[in-house]
Image (cartoon, rainbow, N blue to C red; front, top):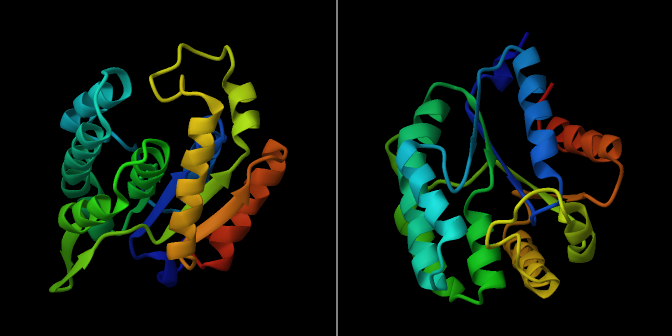
Length: 219
């Protein structure tokens, strides 16, 4: 049974380059929270609403420049935030999100080389929410970053499915994406929890559990 200290809403994001294995563990974590009596909203970005899923399909498959990608991703995020994430947090739920804004800084900022200063402006505008009568920029309580060398991620993805336009990028692109995640972690070290994803699935899972237990989010 959940304790009183665990009843407030919690927002946890999962980040990492394609092939890092984050999606493998997000379902397991949802089950762990539900086993403790929590209500869990499991969602993703881009996506999470009917509108955002339509924008996701455009971003992942249609050719466009980095600015257009960024604007579409943040438009999807705005709808997702106000239609799904904020209502769930207000009800005391655990929100587990497969990627959030750090991915935009990593993929469009790091991978595409887009202006991170403009991304920061969009971040403040789009993620502005009012909590307890005060305006704030919504960020996850914890961001779990599955850090994996780009070469190993490419090996894991090889032949698994038809790649989208990001998955089809060369290894050097994913090195830049990983660097983008690293910069975000350095900017928000208390929010980020880096997981060495170049381990067995069982070892990675144990590391995820340790992170959330140490932060008091999982009993």
